[in-house]
Image (cartoon, rainbow, N blue to C red; front, side, top):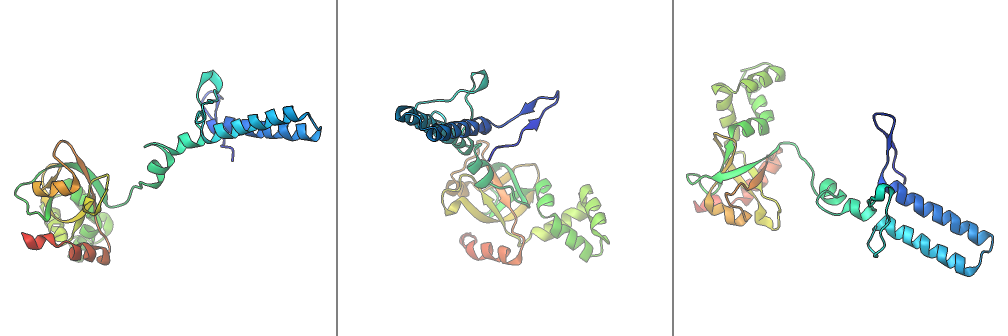
Length: 243
């Protein structure tokens, strides 16, 4: 399918490179059909078939067979394979990775005083990740009457809110992941402990499983929401019995 043209400021239009490549295929296909209708010589038809095949090849992988189609301003138009390959391609950018709610990302630093099943979670991050649970507890304890008031109180982040947050995270596991997740130990459950700063604290002996170190490596935090999702990491996290 042809891509839509986008009007720019000043009356100009921007169009996808695929439009030019598709146009070449359509034009050569129509020209081949006309040549066959008028019973053109076989050598001309054969040459037109070859040119049609070249146009299709350029659409799929421009330059893949040693022939590169050059567009306006001597520019190399992007083919279908150019769009889907690489880190910014359709697969890795849009399909293999998705942003999810109640997740965060930060640099890891050493936390030698932590137990192996614990991780230091920055208060600033924790108050955002656990906000629904904090709001629920604030209303249940009659500290506020509604969600709007709870959110205003959370923005102040006073001692009362921090105390409720501490109660919420006790016994609530979180998942830490370091990309690329190449094996099952690349994502593990931990017991969060509130810490200052903006970095996630991790016990040094836990790092080898993640293939992580403390030279500005980053890790993602995921909060299981449903009760079943919270129960599963508790059951699988057997390492706390070794501490």
